[in-house]
Image (cartoon, rainbow, N blue to C red):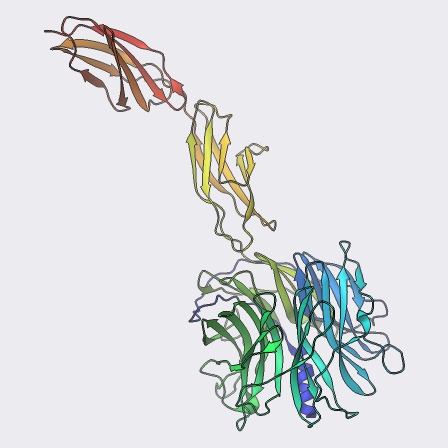
Amino acid sequence: MNTSYAIRRRLTRYVAASLMLAAGVSATVVTSAGAATGTISLPTLTLLPSGAADNSHAMLTKMSCVNSTCMSIGSYEDTNAITRPYVVVTVNGSVLTSQRIEGPLDATNSTATPVTASDISCVAGITCWVVGSYTTGGRLRPFVTTLTISTTAAIAWIPNALVTNVPLPNNLSASSSSHSDVLTVKCTTSNFCLLVGQYDTANSTVATFDDVWNGTSWAAPQVLPAPSNSLDPGLWVPYSISCWDTTDCNIFGEYRVTGSFLEIPMVIPVASGVPGTPVALPLPSDATTNGNASAIRHLSSTCFSATSCLLTGSYINNHTPLPYTETFVDAMTGTKWNSAMESLGPNSSNAVNQTPSSLSCVSATTCVVAGNYASSNGNAAGFWTYDNGAWNTPDVLPGLDGQITLNMYVNTLSCVSSYVCTYSGYVSNQSGAQAAVVGQYDMALPHGVTQVTVAQTSAHGATVSWAPPAIIGTGISTYVVKRTGEGTPVCVTSSTTCVDTTVMGGTSYTYVVTSISNDGQVLSGTAVVFNAVNAPAAPTHVSAVGGVKSVTLKWTAATSGGPASSYVVVVKQGKSTKTYHEASSAKSATFSALTAKVAVHITLVATNVAGTSSVVVVSAVPKA
């Protein structure tokens, strides 16, 4: 194996730093400035396994979450200055426990060292697969170990999983100096996992392979090809796996172009572990064409379907006099990929050497990217979100209280539910100390319900109605309706209406409707003012005058009681009775086709939703 390549390949995992961006998937990546108002919790130090050194140089590099429980893997130094992998369990960003990850037994039947944990993927249960490498007989070999997390956040290693070696293709080199490794893994269920790694072949080349967990064992590994213009057909660096259903996934990585040594991002579609045709992906127009300096790194991906994916990463631009690292976003719609440069920093002119590290999406249009950039105060980390077609100004991560923090790195994050993300990474200070940290980032929540209206339905009844908020992914579980100044809700409901049966006429009420998402997010309440009415008083100055076979009724609206919404007039002559409804603005009505010289008896009431007034009775005789 090429030594410089091997070193670069293995160090890549730990160079991945931080920054946050968000992106939707569209045919054209559009950028515009916006204000982000997300909330970042201060990062907290993680627990370390027993035997850790005082300055353990701990860091967390990968994460996988199931709902609000997240498992992060990383490394620390023990008191013997040996680097050990470990896993940290957090719930809602708070650290609960940690444990060292042990590798398989080596040839001497003792625990192999050193051991490196490369990636973790968890499924509902909570069962997680951790992949990495260990050293045995001076050679690097891949392994998989499986763990479960109980409801009390205790970590349990599944029996025999500790000694699971990963099967490798038949053309594996038998040389005592050959190496192999697993770099990334993605599990969709307890019966399907896809891992990707590299190994030295019998032809003294490096090849990339995948393997599938079928619920009981790892199936036969498959060699993964690079694009046809690759420097070496099997030599490319896998970074990320994204699956859009149980067994269909895309593997993203980078390869070197033959002749120019230019580094290019790429993707291979995989169905149940069987690879398709690799495809080279585009870079922004200002990417350097100097292959020795192109440096594609920090690839992170999310796919929503076979034709809709998002990929973020970093590249070296061709700026003069000094090129620097920038962030790119590749978006796939249908069969077309588009690439754009995104400046990730509160001030793009000062935020250089941008290195996005992790992408997580709650929908095809709302994503978050974590990463870092160089600032005048050292390395800064932040979170970038995409909302309503615009890239938002980043929310910058604060340092630890009581620490002189020069550098802050967020290596990984997962938006475990709509608008709630957990992140992990590390901090370092002026004295050279380095510590692993975790925290929570809450994306800016959307506004609450809209179109709130109140309609009075009776003397003591009113119906409050509203339109649901535009929340992504999770949906709304509960609406809470309260009247201002009262502690007890009028309604707690899953519908978009609320009936209040305790209103009093002549009283003004302010209703506040608050919505709660299925994952517990409380959206801002929306208020509406409502004035309850009393039943109207009887009309005054009521009179009836006979005309030619007609009678004209006149009245004046009452000045007390509630406003009338209509007037009801009943006209009775002999055995004939007819009812008429007059508008609230009416002050008179004429009734024709009556019998001359026969008395007409008329009743008049005012009415509204609260009730009906007392009856006024008058009479008149039509003329001949």
